[in-house]
Length: 498
Image (cartoon, rainbow, N blue to C red; front, side, top):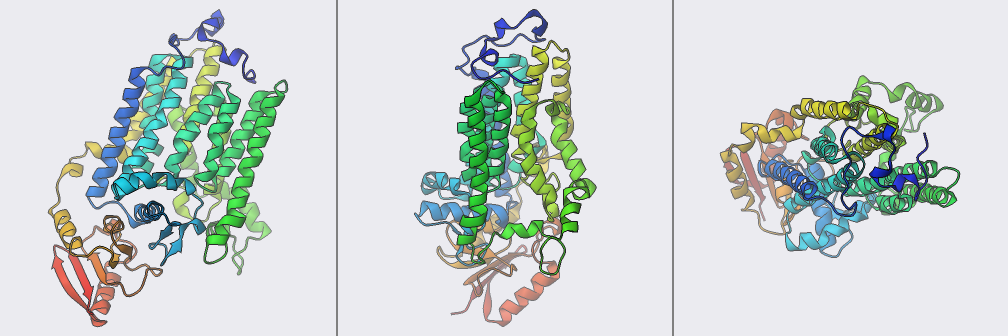
C-alpha cells in the first residue's frame, strides 16, 4: 500500500481517521511541534546511561587504541587547526586517506575546551541520545504516548546501540540523529525535510552515501506517481548520495592515502594472486557468501528481532540494505557479527520501520499493535543482558582496581610532547598530550622516547602481541639501550637513554 503524498492524508491530524482505524491506544492530540517533557526526560536518562558506561569503561583502562585513540588524535588535529592525522595508523598518517569523515571537525570547539578522549565519549552519548527524540516524537504523534514510550525505550536500550556505545567512540554516531530525523520526516510524509536531513550523511562516512541513495529511492517510491516534486526530490537525493560515495572512494580518499588507493576495497577482494576478484568469487559473494557463514544470518535475525520482524512490513527497512550488503560482502569477519559498532546505524532504521509498520496497521484497522509493542519490550529485556549496557548492573564495573592508579602514576612520568609506544588500553590516556603509537604494531613510529606496557593485561584483551612476543620485544628494547624507568604491578615503563 502506497502512502499518500506529502500534504495529503499523511499529514491529517489523528482525529480525522475513520472508525476502522481506531487505535488501541489513543494518539496524542498535543501540538505536534511541542515535545512532551517525558520524551526529553527519556532522552536525558539514556544520555546519562550511555555516558556512564562509556566513561566507566575508559576509567577502567578498557578503551582501545583502535578506535578511541585514533579519533582522539584526529579531533585533536582539527582542534589545532590542522588537517587530521593519526600517529596510531602510521607516522603522520593523513586520516582523510583512511575514511572520509569531515564531520568530526564539529567536535573541535568542544575539544579545545576539554582536550580529552572523554570529550569524545560524552559527545557520542549525546548524539545517540538525541536520536531518540525524533523517533519517539513521531511514535507519539501517530500511536500515542504509551506506544511512544515503549518504542523509545526499546530503541534506546537495543543491542545495536549498546554494542556501539560500549565500544569506544566512532564517527557514525553523527549518523544516528540525522537518520532518525530523516526517517521520521519520511514516515510523516515530509519528503523534502527527509531529504535535507539525509544529505549530510555523506560527510559522516564514505559508505553512508549509499544509505543516502537508498533514502532517496524510498522517497521517490513514497511520493507516488502523482507527486512529481517528491519523485524529483528522491531521485536527486539518490544521485547525490551515490555521487558522494563515488567521489570519496575514487577521488578524495586515494588522494590523501599514502598508497594512492582506497584501502578498504581489499576487504571485498577475491582469491586470485593479484588480490582481485574473479567472476566466480563475485558470484559466490553475491549469493551463498551473503548468508555464509551462519554468523551473517544470526546478525540479520538479531537486527530485525527487536521489532519482532514487523520492520519488514515497511519500505523504510530498505534503507538498511547498503550497510548490510557491504558488511556481509566483506572478507573481514569482524563485520559479520553483532560486536563493536557496526550495527549502530541500523538501529534507527529498523525502529523507524517499526513505527511506520505499526502506523500502517493502525490506519488499516488491523489489531495487534499493543501485542507487538509488548513483544518488542519483552525482546528488549531478553537481549539486554547479553550486551554492553548490562555491565552497569554488574558489581565488577564499580570495583576500584588498584592497578589503575599505578598506571596513571607511571603514565604521569612521561612528559608532554614525548614520543611514546604504549599498550592498547593505555593509548587513549596518552594521545591528548603525547605523540602516541601502539606498542608492537608494525606501522608504529620506531625508536620512541618512552615505552609503557601492561604485561598483566587479561589474555582476552591482549593485542597485538602475545605474552611471549611482548616479553621478547621488551628484552630487545633493553638490549637496544632502553632503561627501566619504573616497573610496578605488571606495568613496565622504559625510557631511551640519551
